[in-house]
Amino acid sequence: MTIGIGGWGSRRKPMSLVREIIRSKLKDLTIVSYGGPDVGLLCATGKVKKVIYGFVSLDSIPLEPHFRIARQTASIEAVELDEGMLQWGLLAAVHRVPFLPTRAGLGSDLERNNPDFKRIQSPYDDGETFIAMPALELDVALIHMNRGDESGNGQFLGPDPFFDDLYCLAAKRRFMSVEKIVPTQDLIKQASVHTLRINRTMIDGVIEAPNGAHFTECPPDYERDEAFQKEYAATAKDLEAWEAFKKRYLDVSSEKEYQEAVKSR
Image 1 (cartoon, rainbow, N blue to C red):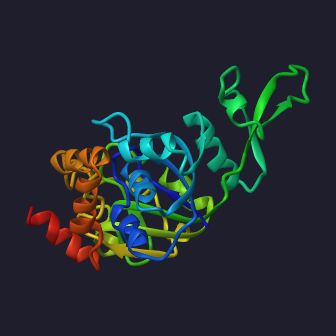
Image 2 (tube, rainbow, N blue to C red):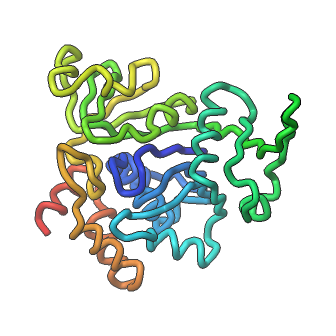
């Protein structure tokens, strides 16, 4: 199964849904992401077979440490892309075309590291050469927004919409967690209509998940939990610390128990 995960680095990630995957029997997943702890946690818990990514970072900690271990030990298949190529791959899937031409990646080691990628020549007089970026078709997309209604309209209230709409439009099934479900008419009380990035035709299921992006940021509702992120990152250097972290925060039966464990620390 190929799962696209919205957000960006350690920002507005659908972490409650990621934690639900960790508690499930799903495995051998292909993850498509501008990655953060979503990718690191799924790698560290043995859920991932392949990661297609533009980067995997915790923002204030440049390299996601658990993903770094997965790369160094070759426990996963990694497809590292230019950030623009990932966007173009999603856009090709949105438009239901097999590829889109892009200059991104030309002249770099990207082609050497991804020998399956093909070049294509413009059929017009310019004759320019491009990389034909394959469509990144997704089985499922997971995103997190600040507000939403029961129909699946979603609203971001932070500074950046990221590419959450592309993930939804590129996927067969789309699920959105939100900080708070509100009546449809209340969606434009906090911000303009332009913040309604997600509409109900893009979504198959809505989940109300307060603090659901924890420990990533979800402004203006909350900032990144830097102390928790440091605690998480430190476990990549110590197997005993990782097992203790996993037992306390991940080997719980529900998101409610996770949130209670976070509050009690």
